[in-house]
Length: 244
Ligand SMILES: N[C@@H](CCC(=O)N[C@@H](CS)C(=O)NCC(=O)O)C(=O)O
Image (cartoon, rainbow, N blue to C red):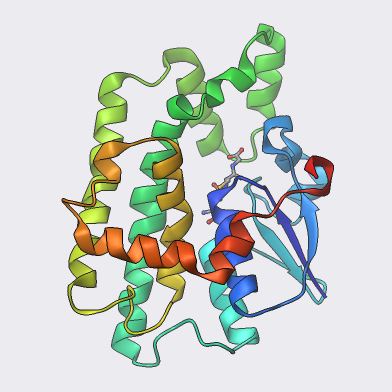
């Protein structure tokens, strides 16, 4: 049995849902509402000490970090294979996934604070309530980032810097796609799945610099084909029972 603890709009959760759909794996859903901070519930922190989604529990064993979860799923449910066989290509796939997670995701998070109006979650809270939210953060790093955002906000300069870092990764992906239809070759791989949720977010957030397909025509073409994938449609149309 496989249980996925996830959030409906969470990009990292969509990676896992898309991988599960590619492999036609049955799973049980435990939906966490991030706006209500379900992810900071002490019970949940026992299986995800970082207090973020997603987490899977497979055969009684918990695993977190979405890029590692999807590699695990590819190991345990090998069909269809979502990683190149060639060791060099496989290593390149991991480098792409690392850039997507540690440069692109990290920076888009700064932008989303404003674009997705995440700061509104804290509107109307008293200083004591805000302090409680800070105290509840699962890690010192998350506490420091949130404290700075609550105290100083995110400036135009911060936004521009973060968006430019995201654009650099997208430029790299456009170059990678010069000689191949998918990021790791002729078929969909974990690298394609790793970036797909962010592309959707750039479109939804109406970020023209990040969805400029004249500047990045190969990535634009890749994005059109990705949206057609059944696994993409299944993963992205998920709605928690309470929203149905
Ligand atoms: N590197 C982690 C990142 C997970 C992550 O940042 N999840 C976000 C949603 S996409 C989250 O849970 N945010 C809630 C919070 O930070 O409080 C992964 O890939 O699983």
